Image (tube, helix red, strand yellow):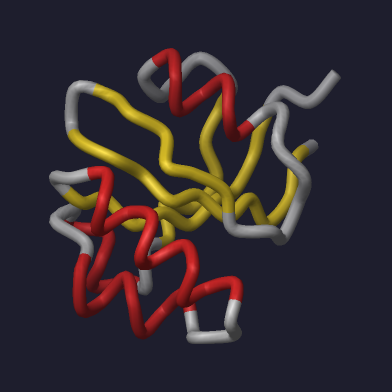
Amino acid sequence: MAKTASALHILVDNEKLANELLAKLKRGVSFDTLARKYSTCPSKRNGGSLGEFNKGTMVAAFDKAVFSIPLLKPYGPVKTQFGYHIIKVLYRN
């Protein structure tokens, strides 16, 4: 079972926008471009990159998604107390 992961995310404050961004990603728009333009998280400066982190480090709903969704495919929205996340997992170890 994986203990670490690396992921990108876009954090927005409403589900409608999260769904619109997910649709754009599925049409081939760059994750980096959308994260830099729309995300409210400081990680937007790095294209939404959260780097590598340990399982259990992130809030529960986010953590559960990262360690269960398919790799390299945008997924969401995932609701947490911070807002709505679109997540793309790069790898798990």
